[in-house]
Length: 252
Image 1: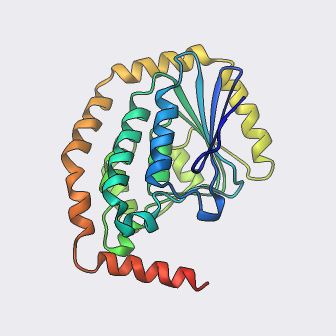
Image 2: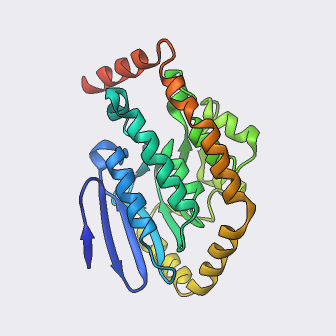
């Protein structure tokens, strides 16, 4: 049964799966504040006996992060609020989250991976944080990634000094398993069936994580650093660099 295709999401609930697909390929699945809010609402509404499946309708990209046109146009406060609410919903989800990802996962796209319980990735997955090229440090991305990765590696990502290829994401624990990109959709579906058939174990894992200290620690850290996001955006030259990038992009 299809529930919604509003904003940039397609949602389907059937056979104990709550499937959510990012569906804005022409904009690289960039998330607006409205899309983040919708995603948050769907995740928060999942039943404990369901498995949330997060994926993209595109075979070559996962999520480019937040919609920079929106936030440079004055929507940054709304995006910050919506992203914090989405992070909270994923971190405290009562249902396990299985993410199927191929292609690029940037910025907030990396957050979606880090907050998932299981990540089935294609071998073309690339995880990156491009914000620093504009002079913006991805403060919220850093906080979430540090819950999964070593701080030094997160710093390298957040200043744009490195990206993570699929094999590296697997070795570091950000990806659970990596499959060949050729035939990925069918192979990933088989792995999803494998996990769904063991939903009791996934539910136990999720409950244990919700009871652990990491979730509470992340919430406190986000609350402390979130005000720095708007301050950073207001630094000299940041908005100008973003506008220049968008202008060049529109001419292609």
